[in-house]
Image (cartoon, rainbow, N blue to C red; front, side):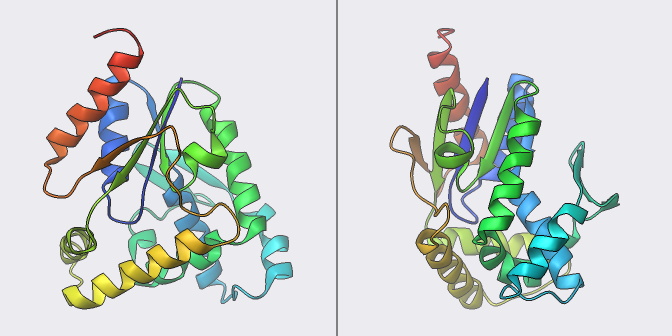
Length: 218
């Protein structure tokens, strides 16, 4: 069984997908972390987004694995490194590359078809698994999402102005929703939840209730 949770940056989809997967006893696949890991790899190698041929040649050299809550890039735990502001700045551009998306979608399908999974991302319900059992789309106000990002960065010792983070999120939203390949859109058959002002527990309960209802267990 496949459950997808899509939405813009900071909408809470990663947290909710993780919590829902744990509650259901499903696997959790963080597709966003996969794109961040590839972005980190490109940044470390000084590869520019415009160097498509070089990127295409490097993709086969990238291995991505999940170990519990951690993501491994060529065997290295990069769980914290992929959350840097530099990766945040470039991940949309890297994610928009056809070669990158085709490779990662292939990996995502390969992992998730091995069992029951909750996936989160921006196109999991539209491109990766359009026939998923249950689809969700989470959203929140720009200000709410910026606050969440600020809190996340402060926990790592990074401090950024709230207005700057709001502008970065708006820029990210624009890039994600207007890219040619797999843009961020609400799946027409998704349950839409605005998480602004809601606690993680409240959002989790809504997700769980919907899944149980569809399974005929409520």
